[in-house]
Image 1 (cartoon, protein in one colour):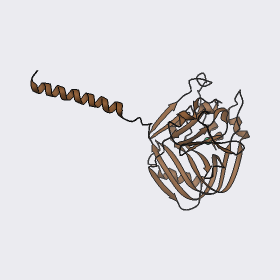
Image 2: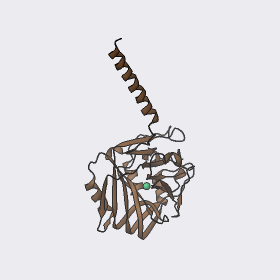
Image 3: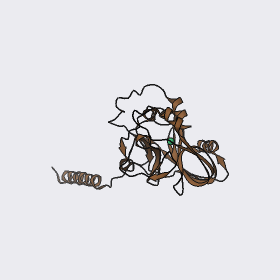
Image 4: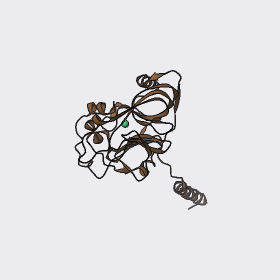
Length: 264
Ligand SMILES: [Zn+2]
């Protein structure tokens, strides 16, 4: 080997060692620009309500999102890294890390688009404005709306006992809350049409008041003024239950009608 060959070999060796060192000392980042989801909407429709993942685990994957709790015990809202439960009696509590969820979607929220709502608009109008703002209808969007609401219609669902009934039956007994003059935050997602079966195509919103005493799955609202933040999200990470009712469940068929019934 000539001296120059030695030099090149030495350089490659050092580079290789440096490369390894860089990889092993790099900080561990949680996934960004990713919707992280536990289970599927069709499994939830079919009555898979047993919690499969802990809140502690969910909080490692995002700081904003929505879902439900073990046994379908109310509506879950994740905001600024805190996980809240709106029970069917309307009370709101912070969920401990040890509790479990059968269905949740969260993301590390970082706004890509910010818009002001300067004029009063209802939920339908708000959705039309958002539709016009999305740069594509083939991506996921996490959405956060902080504002003042002259009215909010929200719902929650009662905890279920085994054998679990399908979700369409449960929502017949949902509690509907009407709030007026509420300062609060809407959190949720817009998902593309092709997500059908896995999540809810279109909008899915939950809401919580600033004083953390009111909230639920959003059915309607009139927002006076506020700020909309949109996080364009191209990645999707699905975490499916390995135990419980999920593995043996027959998930064939199409359930778009049922989704419409339980969400709207
Ligand atoms: Zn919901």
